[in-house]
Image (cartoon, rainbow, N blue to C red; front, side, top):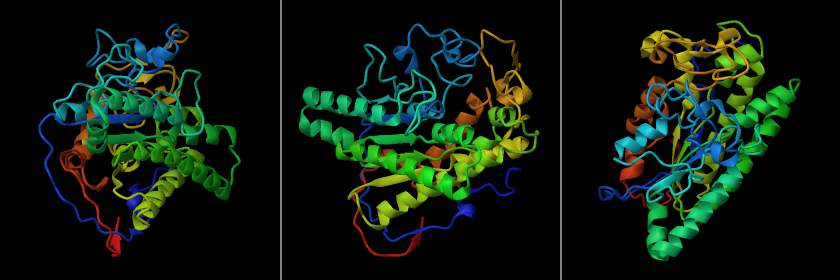
Length: 376
């Protein structure tokens, strides 16, 4: 399956909500920012090393981190910083520390993301699945309540932004293990994944979380790892996996529409970043965005350098300039791409639905329901 000529998720679906948001905009004092990050390897800042400290995990060694963390790779699956690192810098905050890092300062939040983690499964033994990430968050919230008092802890939890990207691992694992799935079977599966995700998101909401920033699943069928794994040509995509991600992303928007139209969670407010479109556009037309290579990774072996980056067991290639590439390894972007994506998430653009992150962080949102039909 070739990558669609117009990969924008908004063109795949046309959805509406029945709530207009009337908000009270009150600027938060400088430094009064709180940031929690959940997800898989797209957002992982180094949690897995604390689960299995004796395991060899390539992302904790060069060439990972070479652009920004060359002296001490951190477990980020890139040559440098990730999107949330750039966002933290815009807030004049330090990078959010991994929740399992001993002695870390969690005053302004934490990173719970874990490579290999899904909503329903994990593909590596040291991965922390989304539900467990939420449990760790609840423990941190309880510690805040104990240390700060219930009122201040509740205030901070309500101020915080919760950035979530989960589900890609579920899509990939299902596509590999059930390669003969029909569309209805795929739909049934992604619906289950979405329901599991929002069951856990509801736990964050119950702790006082109100401002959520969701990132959908990228065009997994078109990344170098998928091209190698499913043996597709340079300009083609792995059809089953690409379809699965589109179904997942449609189901995500549908669920958000239901929550807002029904006002099921009073005070719930969200932003949605269309990572699928943003990365898909850069794969399809890299030169438009300042890159040279969209279908081959900077680091790796096999076709498209789709696997083996950092491996001790096989020879792999490494490019000279990662900033020329959309992907650093087979499944993850370069720091140069994450910098661009963070700017879109922060400032807004065609790939941002609802408020950009700058507004989501800077304003306290009081939501009142009023029946109106308006586009998402």
